[in-house]
Length: 370
Image: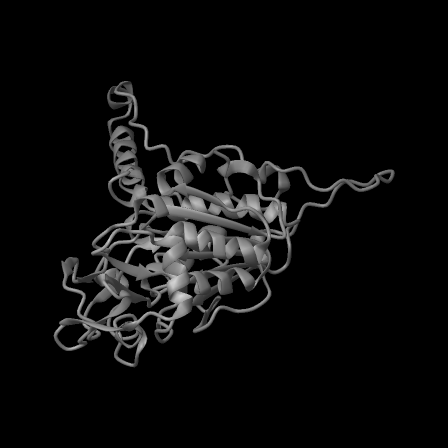
């Protein structure tokens, strides 16, 4: 799976990139980036407006999310824009400028007042933000120069680390529950034919015992490698927030038959690990969360994407019919906006994805409180 996805001719390294084969929340609508801007604003204030303020996108594809955020924050030198494209109405805390603590809805630390002095406004985020894409593929030729491109997650992050549908592509081992216990499931990279291999290691056996209880006969997707990858990512933060967005499941509802599948050209295909298609499996989110919490030593928040986006202002409400008579063009725009939000928040689709928020060394604004 590792070579099929990330080898020299792997699916994510060669070719046009993930957007040519499937839609993530980043590709579906600019609403996603708009909501992340609001999260950035709150986090920036909670951290005291650090310089630099890092935004690290892990599994960045071809840099689509950071391109949007760069334009919205105004890093590119173009006029600062909200990034909403008219899809979400402004509200208190909306980062149109991301320059004041008032805009973030968080009061700045108080200092002794002196006669004739006034609190200094923080330096605009556009002058402090440092955008970093992490991806195994070569840097796209058209990527704006202000976005750094790395093949490994950097150390010492202060700000936001975001991983949108990265963890489902972290390679993992499959196992089958036999009369002799759990054994690895082997897959021929040329044909996709499956066979039973050696018994699982003690480490994987422990993981299965704790996180994947299921009656035989059954197959399992051993999420230990994903736990380790997430824990390592969280450990790269000095202060800030790690946000993992992915499809997954919990211990109480593990899929008996597994979730391994493939995607190519917008179609679901057999997960043959030959580099010609995406090979993906859902994420054990509770195991993942536990691994990150141990590193961060503070509590995490786990909510659906529907809950997360609505907490950040994307409610997807239909415009009132009265608007159609007063402003027909405005009504159509608002209707299109509601449709875009609906796709991102649909519980049967992208809205059913999980948002795992792991703070590190900071108390985050309770905008995500349930």
